[in-house]
Each structure stands twice: as structure tokens, then as C-alpha cells.
Amino acid sequence: MGVKTDLQPKYGERRTRLPPGPWNLSRAEKREVCNSFYGMKVPESYSSNIKNLVSLQDSRLLGLKSHDCHTLMQQLLPVAIRSVLEKPARYAITRLCFFFNAICAKTVDVSKLDKLEEDVVVTLCLLEKYFPPSFFDIMVHLVVHLVREVRLCGPVYFRWMYPFERYMKVLKGYVQNHTRPEGCIAERYIVEEAVEFCTQHLSDVSTVGVPSSQKMGVSKPLSGCTNTEEVLPYIEQHMIHIKTAYPKFRKRTKWLQDKHNSTFIQWLRFKVQSELEEDNHGVSENLRWLAAGPNMAVPLYRSYLIKGIKFNIKAQDDVQTTQNSGVYLLAHTMQVASAKDKNPILSNMGFYRVIQEIWDLDYQKFTIPVFRCDWIDSSGLVVDELGFTLVDLSKIGHRNDQFVLASQVKQIFFVDDPMHRGWSVVLSMSNRVYNDVIGDEVLGDVIIECEPFTRGMPNVDTFDELVGELGSQNIRGGCEDIWIE
Image (cartoon, rainbow, N blue to C red; front, side):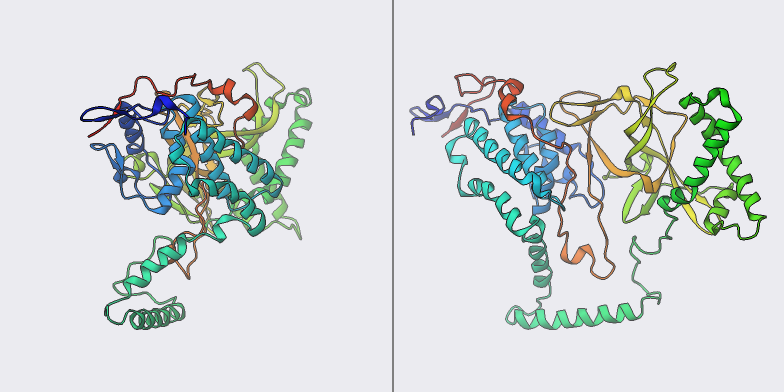
């Protein structure tokens, strides 16, 4: 073809040498990528155990299922290759991962499809600069049409084949007589359907010899949103009360907030008691128990299942192969420039950390789970040029406010950054909705969605300035040649 002639095979008498291209990894880089995958711990039900898919001896990934390939392509691969390859080739691969992360979402913003289609075309052009022509088969070309399919047919997860492939495996397991496979499948399906109907009819009967699911038997805690809505009017009244009692500090926002935090619980108790003495007080039963306070004996848990999501404390994660202790909180709070700042700014701010303790507060009529977390200080939080959020888990701050409602946080997980030692990349997962009638074990996940770690791709106009150029030589330096006998 007359392109990239310096990468053409060099024929010898006994062996043929293939010069390394921009896409080739050295032996050290292969080990580094495999070690990065080997050390990843992901939340439960996120994917397979990545550690079991890595062969450190051969520097290969083995036994990946379609679900694992999606999680690697959408989230884990861009993190694993952060310290390998040269920037132009690495960023081109990362852009392709960004595209699939956006295209596989549950909801798609139609107004952004045109920009997404332009980005994927440019991404494929960038891949053509750094990858050989043999890489671009018909499957790579079809990526261009995925955005058009979304525009015409809707989100991708309504149309892909993964749940049906999983269910075909279930049907194959029904076959006992290989000479009559259709009859085996039909009879077994009828029997299973009849058993499911009987199970629903006898749903309140305790079974013998059949263990209950971990998603069953969990008491429903009081929603944190309901608590906030019921208590919010009293919060506003208390702030007015403080400003009236301390007129000299009316304009000192930070002092008023600190005073509110230290006196609100006691004030609310007396306020509700005084309202209960009146006729037609309108105080709900939930608010009455909230004002009375919880039981002083608080049970602690190592794991807690809420809304189908399992949370662990850090000590529990240390002895398991999964990671369920990372949480993220988006709060509308005050941001101060320094300790002497008397007029902070109110804005949304994100907080990251792992759970240290799980408390279940007992209010007699209901329970409220809360997490005690060590929040990361703002000095240990960085967002890089590609949108990755990096945190230093050793920098702890906000020690005066460690508790948060379990209903207010979102589960995340941390992956060690191979580029910066001591830092971790923050990744998030979508919340899964469990169905008691048809479990995930039967049909599998219809939706394979990974929350985006960035809201956009690098600016194409400044892409070469951002990543640099490879130069006129296509051969990658510092990488071993490939020899063919």
C-alpha cells in the first residue's frame, strides 16, 4: 500500500523481523498492564473477578465473557493503560473507550448525538494514524453507524444479544436426552413455570432446605429523602431563631451554620414536644420519633444491603475479593477559602471516601442506616486533563462531620493509578434494580452501563498539542522487535 514503509517486515535467512509499531507493548509494559488488572477489586455484581482473568505468567487476559469485555472497554482499560504506550496512541484508544461508555448508557441525550457522531469519526481517523491497515476490518467500520442506529432505534441495550445468549445457556442446561432436545426444553420450561407460580402462591411459607436470597428478609429503612422533607421546615425555623437570638452574627454565614449544627437536635426535641401539647398539631409519627432520638444501643454491621446495593466497611473489603466500601456524596455545602474566611460560598461539592463503620439507628418504629466515613481532604483530590478523578486516600479531612445517611451516597470504587503511585482513580457504577419475579441469574443483565468518568472527549482542535506527535518515524523506540520463525 506504500504507507508506513518503515514498519514493513524485514526478511532474513531464517527469521522475519517485525519492527514494533506505536501499538506494540514492551514486555515490561505488558507486565504492568496485567499487574494493574490483577490488583483491581470491583464491586459485587459489577463483573467477574478480574484477578481470575489475568495470567501474569503469560501476560494475557483469559476467559473473558461479553459482560467483562464491556466493563474493561468502558472503564477499566483506560485506567490500565495510563502509564503505557505513547500519548498519541494511548489517547486515541481512550477516546474510543469514551465513545462506547456514552453509547451504552441507559439514557441518551439526543441533542448530543451529532457531536458524538463527529467525535467517533475523528477517533477512527486518529486510530488510522497509529494502527496498521489490517486492524480496520468491517467490524471497526461499523462503529461509525452506531450513533445513527441510536438515533433511529433508541438506546443500544434494547437491541443487543447478550441477555438472549445467556438465556440460551439456560435452555441448553434443560437438555437431558440429546436425541430429543426440543422436547426436553419444552417439558422443563413448563415444569419450571409451574414451580414459579406455586412459589408466588406460597411466598409467605418458609421453605425447607432452600436458602433464602440475600436480597430477601432485609427490613426497609426509612428513606433519607422523607426525613429531609419533614425536617426541612424546622431547619429554616431554627436558622431564623439563631439570627434573632444572635443579631451580631447575622451576616457571618459560617458561624451561623456551626451554631445550627451544634444546637439543632436539642432545639428540635423541645420544639416538637411543645407542638404535641397543642390540639391539631400536625406532627407526623415519623417526625415524633426522630425528635425523640434513637436508641442509645447502636448495632454495627460489616455489610449492609440497601436498595439492592451492598455496602461493606473497609475491614470487610480487606478480606474479600470485591470492593463495596467506596462512597460518593454530592452535597450543597459551604466552601471556604481559609480558616479565617467568614463569608463562604454555597455550592455543590463532591466528597469521596471508604466506609469505616455502618450504624443502624433504631427509632423504635423504623431504622435509619448511617455510614461513618473518613472523607478525603480537598488537597487530595485532582481532576486530570482527560476527566479522570484522582484521589489520595491517605489525606483525610472533614473529621468533624463523618456521618452520612446511607440513602444519600452513591457507590463508587477506587483503582490504583499506574501513572501516579499513591493515587487512585475514582470509578462509579450504575445502580441495579432487582426483580423478585425474574432474577438476574436467569436472563442476566439487559443493561451493561458504566457511569462515565468524564463528560466529554479531549478537544480535537488541540489534540496534537495535548498529546504531542509521534514524529516522522512509525517505529516505536524502546520496544522489543517481534521475530517470526
